[in-house]
Amino acid sequence: ATSEDAGYFPLQVGNTGSGATILQMLSAADANCTIHMGDSASGAGRYDGYIQYAHNTRAMNIGSGANNTLSMNANGIVTTPRQPSFHARRSGNYTGYAASTSGGNSQQIILYNVADYNTGSGFNTGNGRFTAPVAGVYLFRAECYSSKTAWEQSWFVVNGSRHSGTDSVLPSTGLIIGNSAIIKLAASDYVGFHPYTSDSNQTVTAHVNHTWFKGILLG
Image (cartoon, rainbow, N blue to C red):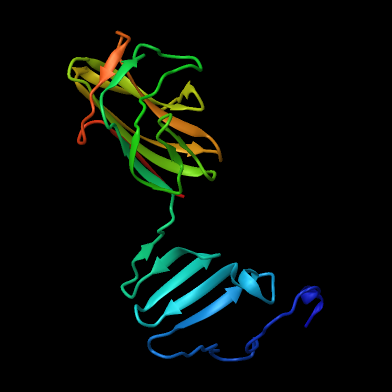
């Protein structure tokens, strides 16, 4: 150990004069090789983090606590099963929507009240908002249909205000409007979708293919 290692318990395999160095872990073909990291000599605190190779699936897994957060299979395909994402829609028509608001901090958003999936529980079906669990860059896509309303444009609302750089304008009015945006959010920022027309008090029509809101954390 050197002065650089003060306060640590270094584990060193090989040295700078060595050739190739191998640290090998072996187990049965139906078992796992796992490195655990924690802050306790017993109990759940022993397993706060882990790196694991699963022999039966030939997958490399990285996790925190009891949660597998990243996996790479034998074909090199990487998945992040706990990455925040959601898909929401309407279970019935949404009446009284204030479509003509265009600025300020009181813009109404579409209340998408059913979540088909909601990984990370960031989407709230009670208010139609997605709240960022962590700071990062997010991708959103939303669509809205009305059997009577002629939509003109749309934008995303962040923390109650029209978010710059998210406006999408139709070349001519239409019954269906959609929008996509990549937005950088701080933790606890919240996002909703606002389709606009100059006539207020609109009815948004529930439609599984045309009235929905989805998003995912990119990184």
